[in-house]
Image (tube, rainbow, N blue to C red; front, side, top):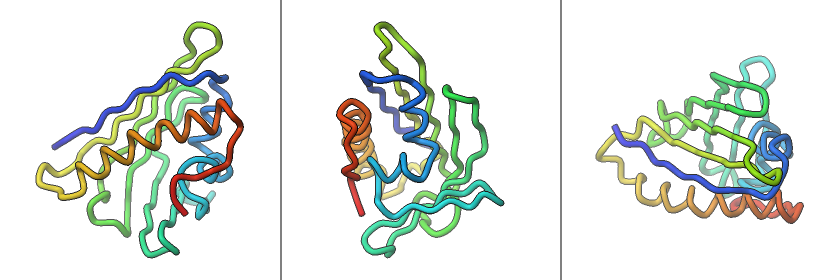
Length: 140
């Protein structure tokens, strides 16, 4: 299995960064404008390209302001049973270190390279969203 890894330093409070990766409005500010959340089963639904592509992210681990782990379930075969693992840490001058691992990719998955490129870009969109208080999602 393959793991995609990304890391970025964001000039912003860890609480703000945490909210960007754990709330509807947070995801809408940097990833996609099409987001909903089911409180009953702890699943975010993220839609792309007029809902033609859907990612379902189930929260399976959460430590306030430091860790969020999602299991990708459902609609997208390439992402199904992969995991998104965000780790946050406060570092010098109130900055936040963000580490992302997207794990359990099938080795022969044709989407690995594109997804890795997208994650690299998304980390900078997240950074810009926090540092400049922007709401410009990467996709809609």
